Every structure is written in structure tokens, then in C-alpha cells.
Image 1 (tube, rainbow, N blue to C red):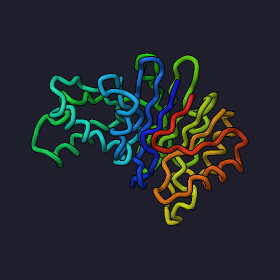
Image 2 (cartoon, rainbow, N blue to C red):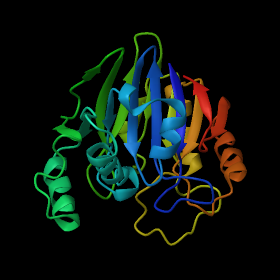
Image 3 (cartoon, rainbow, N blue to C red):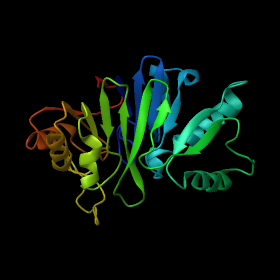
Image 4 (cartoon, rainbow, N blue to C red):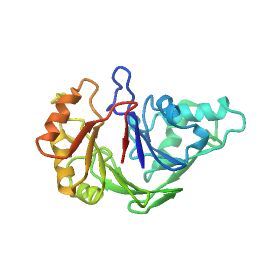
Length: 252
């Protein structure tokens, strides 16, 4: 299983970066986790949109889904006869995207023919070719779902946006790689109140408890010092710690 980082910023992309987006691949199956601002360009360096099996959105904050709008316009007007791409959303996601569409355009139905919208249920696995994606609800300012992805050989756990919670232990248990948000790491602003994210120390504690082989920190504030974030995590986790960045690739 391969993990390609398409974007790793929170809220606002930094220079040369994008917001949350990750491509997980096993054989000919390619699944995108989140589709934040600026992720579609990097995605196409790795895989053709025609070969993308599905997009799974962790939660409905724009830095995790807003490039679906660009994708819709591209599929509708840019490619004759383009197939519709399956998008799996958290509960309530279809109604949310319909409200977004109504604010953007008078065209109805807006998404049809470009994206086929589905809603997943917590704990119910999505069978997507060679990959199985299982949503685990975590704790954030809105409903948010970490993703456990496996191809029967390797397991990737992705935290989504969350605070420290017991649900993360279940999500990460037995995973080989933990992709963990670390918005509060590396000198991020201290005025996040109430805090709805993880620090590098928080992510490292989850990794240590789960016994993962590798911790990949992501979802950085655009001003964050990523080397400092790695050092912060290394205080609590003795395994391999890496910082995500657009274009970086990992063997899960």
C-alpha cells in the first residue's frame, strides 16, 4: 500500500502547499482521502482522474472537501463523456453539499453526472476495490471521522481532525502507519480556544500506544515549523516520525 501526500495544511495552504488530501493506492485501486483546497493538481501527478476509484471525505470543513467544487466543474465541462466519480460523505453530507451547490449556481441538479454522492455510516466498511475503508467517529467541532484503510496486508490509520480521545486508540490499534493531524504543533498560534485539534505530542502518544511503525504528521498550520513538530513528537514516540508535505510518498 502506498500513501501520497496531496496537501497537508490546515485551513489555508502555505506556499507551494495544499490543504488536506491523501491518495492511498494498492495495485490498481486508488482512493483519495479528503479533497481540500488545491489538492486536485497534485492528485493528477500520481493518477488519472479516470483511474480514481473514489473520494472519501472525513468531515465537512471546507479544507477537507472544497476541491469537490472544482472537480465537479472539470468533470461537467472539461471532459466529454467523463464518468461520474463516487464520493463518500459523512452523515448529512449530501444535504450539506446541496446547500453549497445552491449558493454557487442555479444549475440543478448540480452534482449529477460529475460526482455520485453517497453517505457512509460509522463503523460500516466501504469495499473499494483492493482497499477497505472503515470510518471511525472521532471528536472535533463537528462530526468527524477517522479512516482505517487496509488491503489485507498493511493498515493505514488516518485521524481526521480530532481532539485526544479514546476512539483514536481503536482507530490506530494494529496499524502500520498513523497519519495524524498535528494542527497545534510546530509553533502554531496558541489562541485555539477551545482546542479542537491534536498537538504533535498528542499524535505521538496515540502512535506509541498503538505500536505503529511510522507516524506521519499532517494538517499543519501554514506558519508551522514542521521540523519542530517532528522533534516534539519524537519526545513521546521512539518510532519513525515524518512530516507530511505535498509530493511526499510513503510505503504504508
